[in-house]
Image 1 (tube, rainbow, N blue to C red):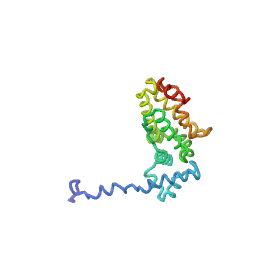
Image 2: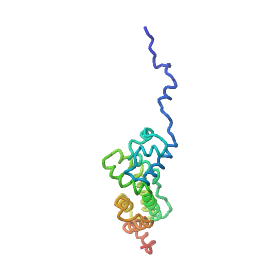
Image 3: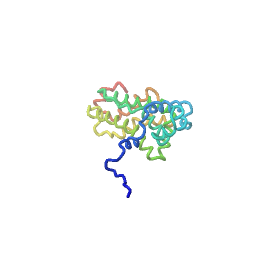
Image 4: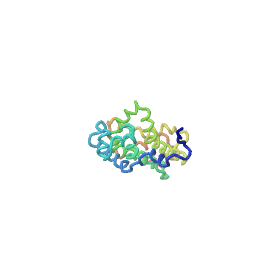
Length: 217
């Protein structure tokens, strides 16, 4: 009768290490966003392919597929990496905080990935719930949460009415930038963030804030 191996003590200790796979190549992590941005600048979103990114980044399509399920997922990752989720600062000044926070959004949308990828990417979100979830969790919600906290600080300072609808204010503050990027009917100017913040605050600010800033309107 043949002796059959058991799992008790006879397993090759290197087997688990072999199954763990190759370590993540950090060079690819740095090269891929640069490749995506260059392709977007040269040929736009419609011309962006996994093959083109792999070639320019000095890697292979299978290597990209191990990290990103599709080119859309790749763009979402680059969107979060290059446009960032810079938190709205706490400067001690409510309208200064909001102008700075919305300003980073406006500036990021003037980059190649913002101008040339975001409108088409938003269209792709409608048909891919998993992609939409990734976009919201990596890019949209972190920015929104940061600005929401700035608004709550404004309430605690007495600058914004306590009954203000935070979600509505968030939509109003960011929607002008999104609207102009998606439809390109008007430019995203350097002054846009300040203009939007001052108009929005004008409707929900307390009398205290209005007294302090009556010369700004």
